[in-house]
Image 1: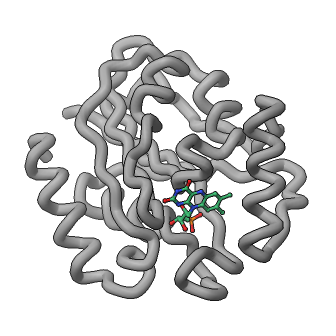
Image 2: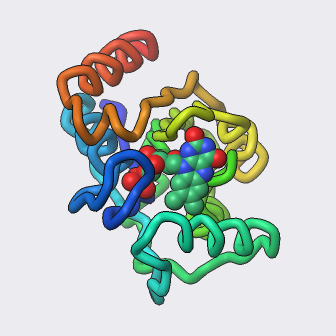
Length: 173
Ligand SMILES: Cc1cc2nc3c(=O)[nH]c(=O)nc-3n(C[C@H](O)[C@H](O)[C@H](O)COP(=O)(O)O)c2cc1C
């Protein structure tokens, strides 16, 4: 039987359009996917999390990190990464890109033979060119991506679930 893994990065605290949240938007979608496809789940977290907990300051730090191309240290690793066939890779859209911690993750594992299904939460930009950035970083086979509005993930779980289910169906799950 093929094995599925969900890997994601997500921030609670203050996010655009949803105020202060206790669970990040991408985390909500990640858990929906993991439940539907019976996947293991791994959250990419910073070893030294000094990110601001308010929205605008966070956008400023993130932009600086993107421009500098930093690779922040992350906590832990996925056990037996080679065993997985499909990796659902979830990210918030940060300046049309992934948070740098996801590059740390992507560059820390061997993607040979894997399929990657990217999913993104955003507030208007959709997927941007995130799938092609993942392709460049991993050289994995890419499946069609899913983009869900962050405020929908946060405040309209039924709608979000429907979007997730439709996408998974299209991918053959
Ligand atoms: C640093 C930063 C940059 C962002 N840049 C964009 C952007 O370029 N386009 C967009 O649609 N949303 C942008 N957003 C909004 C987030 O993509 C959106 O709120 C997302 O759902 C947050 O997910 P999370 O709670 O899982 O971290 C940005 C948010 C942050 C914090």
